[in-house]
Image 1 (cartoon, one colour):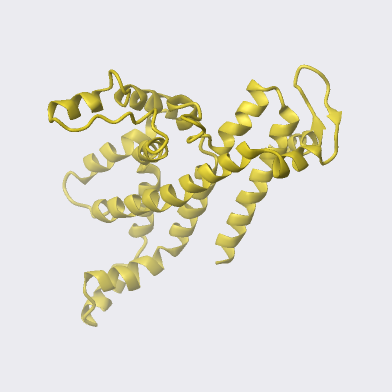
Image 2 (cartoon, rainbow, N blue to C red; image 1 turned 135 degrees about the vertical axis):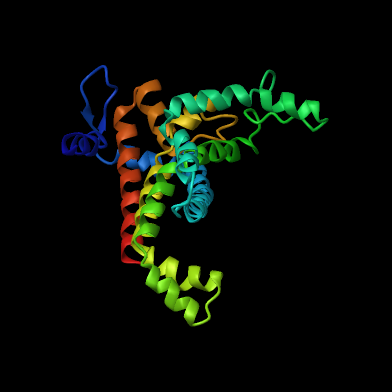
Length: 258
């Protein structure tokens, strides 16, 4: 783990076309990224949009499902399993399935819309729709965060809820003043992990739209991949990776200190 990290840091100061030895260029890669690379800013903006929209939605849905499913009632295990199952599906398979469903010409989503005389939308070729579509696809794998929340809810003592009831607290007040404070460590864990994973979104955009249309889904890691393995600019891609590492580190430190 440490070896590749140090190698990426070293290569970020080189011109490394992969097929030949790296050449030291100092800060040239970083200078170009921050001063001349318009697509770097586009990819950073797309990724920020994804993180800001996806993380609250993902964790909100996960917490809501956990609140519904954490009680030990008959048949609850079946519902937990059904909601968790999409999280076991490989990301590639999930992305391919949704690409087929949303295909503008032969997709089943537009086919069903046509049956009900609803407007057909080119989800995969519309710059306005592609990021919401990718966010929506990612929300199918909400099961992992949900399970973590369920584990946290299981650790909240029932005596606290009973004491709150005696004091006249309604359901919303018990949630706000008992559940949320007791879940703080779990919430912190899920937020940190979700932000890290969201900043590294790659497979959905790569498979569903390959960064298009018009760079609307060109997320940061996808841009790094293209620089490294399509344009053979491993040194430039390494510099971008180091920048992403610093961005994620800053967010993590801020969250931990908060």
